[in-house]
Amino acid sequence: MFRIAYNKSAEHFRRHRQHQSLDEVAEPSSNVLHMERPLMQAQQNQRLLAELARLPFEQRVVVEMKFFQHCTFEEIAQQLEVSANTVKTRLYAALGRLKPQLEVHDGQTK
Image (cartoon, rainbow, N blue to C red):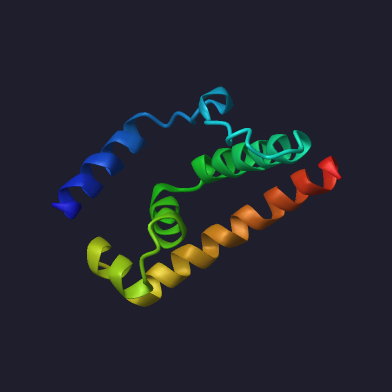
């Protein structure tokens, strides 16, 4: 079932290469006493989502499964039907692409 969902979503993303609007990102709760901290976190989350949307689909899937679904390399490899080394390569390539972009944005906001 996961493979069917993966193939359908891959097909969807290939056809509709659109990025999520930054306005659609949910804002964090306002339970924090200081209003600046949630605003800064929301801005960082928006930048991260925008940069994730720019990644190739294969890399984005691995990042999402590793960090958001907390899957192991072996679990990801099994679900994507690739080797664990391929998963690691895709993850580190994605992180390599994300790091400079996020550092540039962080340097501008400090």
